[in-house]
Each structure stands twice: as C-alpha cells, then as structure tokens.
Length: 110
Image (cartoon, rainbow, N blue to C red; front, side, top):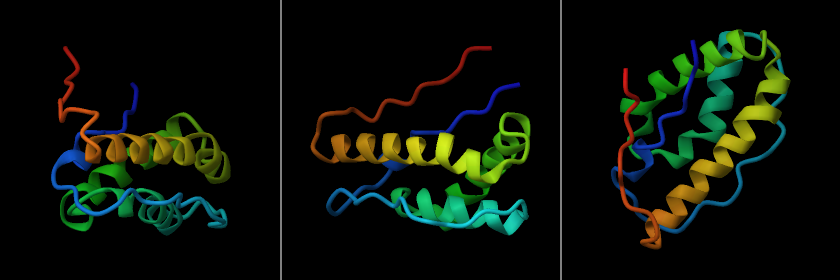
C-alpha cells in the first residue's frame, strides 16, 4: 500500500499571486482534529474549492500516511512530509500561474 498526494487539484481554478510559505508552529498531538488542523493550515490555502471537494480526500490520505509510514508520529509527519509536500504544491501552483506547467493529470496504471 502506498499513499500519494493528488497534485492535479491545484490547477483547477487558479487566481491571484503565489502564496507565501505556510510553515509555522502547529503543535503536535495524535487526535483526529490535529491532523485535520495541519492539513487545513498547510494545504487548505493552496487548493481551490478546498472545503467542498479536496479536504476530505487529503485528510483521509494524510491519516493513512500518518499511520502507515509515520506510525502516528504527528510531529515527524509534519516536518518530514507535510512541509516539503506543501512546498512542492506551492511551487507547482506558482509555475502554473506563470504558464510554465501544463495542467496534465497523471494516472497510475494498474
């Protein structure tokens, strides 16, 4: 089993300037609301229609990744995965806004 972050959603409807870094102190804990808060904080501002369409999928994937890969260590998940993933999504979004990336959706075979 492997988890992946869907990167096609940020290209749906973009407007405005590139966003600044969302890195900040978010605390740690293992409750469901903590993972939701982290995803909201880091990825929410980067996805159009986040609350309506993307949030439930990202939270489900984050929980799977937190349990399967990071063994419930929320702080390590934030530092080792979520912050770098946020930087990648932000870079892709900014590149798309500048016209340097095409909105291609990649699908996994199998």
